[in-house]
Every structure is written in C-alpha cells, then in structure tokens.
Length: 272
Image (cartoon, rainbow, N blue to C red; front, side, top):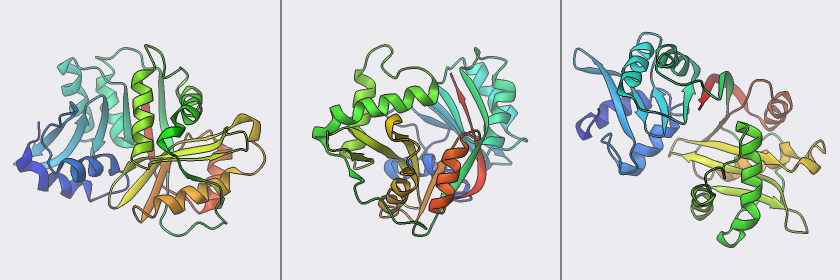
C-alpha cells in the first residue's frame, strides 16, 4: 500500500498519461497524497529494485495506473487473494484486462465485460457551433435532473441505480450539481432534453460521463451541438476533454467526431 512518501513517484507514473490517469490525478490534487483516503480508497504499488513501476487504485472500483501485461496479472492475483469485492474495473484496456486475467479466478461472474471502448479527446475549441441552451444545473433542479441520470445509468449498465434505495445515488447527483459538474438543457416544460456530467476533473483533463439524450429527441441531430457546449464548459476547467464510449455505439462516436474528438487509446470496463 502506498503512503505519503510515495506521492512524488506516483505522480511520475500518472503524468506519463494525464488523460488516461485523470481519476487518480484528480484524487492526488484533491487529497495531496498517495496515502489511503477517508473515502476508503487506497493505492497499491508494485516496485522493482525500490522503484515504483505501476499502481492500482483499490476502493469501490479498481483503476490501474501504468499497469501492463508484465504487472497486471500479478496485481490481479494479489487483489483476488485479498478477498475484496469491487463494483467495477476501468481504465486503459491493457491494464484492466491483464488484471482481470487472474482476478477472474477469485471473482464472481461479472455483469458485463467491455474490453474495447475508444478513449477520445479534444484539446481545441469544438468544430461546430455549441448549443446555446446547455448550462450548469442548479441545486433546486435535482428532482428534474435525477430521473434523467437514472435513465442513463439503467441504459448503460442494465439495472436501476435505485436498487437497494435511492438515497446514495441521489447524493451522488446532488454532489455533481453542487460542484458545477452537472450540465443539462431543458425544454419549455422543464424536462431534461440532454445532460452530461464532468465526472472527473484534474488540472490537465476533464473526463465527461453520463451523456444522455431524451429518447423522444433522439435522431434530430441535436447531440453534436450539445456535446460541443459540453466541451466549451469542460475546457474552462482544464485544457483537454476526454470520454470513453462503447465501441458498438456508432451513432455516438460519429457525433463526437463531428465535434472534434479523436480516438487516442482504448479503455475497458468490467462491471459487477
């Protein structure tokens, strides 16, 4: 387990790919240390000759940092022997799948394995005109935004985020709104037409998550302009905007390319 003394060396690995490693970069900027956090997450490091070679965030989720085929299987075996359970593994595909190659021997059947998810980025102004009606949501709009967030979640992972009670997910969405990481456009009746979140933010990159268009408005060619507006909002916080998308979602990928996103790598996600 890494501690405060390992922070500088961990930053060295994170900075080798600040976009792919935005989750851990955000944590380090917020907490200031590689030591275990009060949220329950810790970072496990792998050393060779006293040099930190790779690491893995281990909390509710697993997030590899600089993990390759040389180190991933060892991480997976170590984490499996620990007896922990996780809700997901996500990150660069090589690291995720190499961890899973041994962790699966200790794990229950995953809900879904998505080994090839294009990681796309843009570090310029969008190529098309942004939608004028997308804005940051307000705390008093939580009850309007929450159903759209839940609908996106259920479409993406296949089950409701309200299973077992709604309070945890409600707090998560409220936190995004309070931090000005929740964006939405509303129709005249106050319904959400489009929404997205700035899910993870560091000084170098913003990772966009939770992109959703109301089913009744799909096919109208609106999503690219809304994503352009998301890019403008995100680039007010960091120079590079990223997202990862399911490889089979050709319509979304085409819209992102219209905005100016280009694939730079491949992510993978394993859901439990």
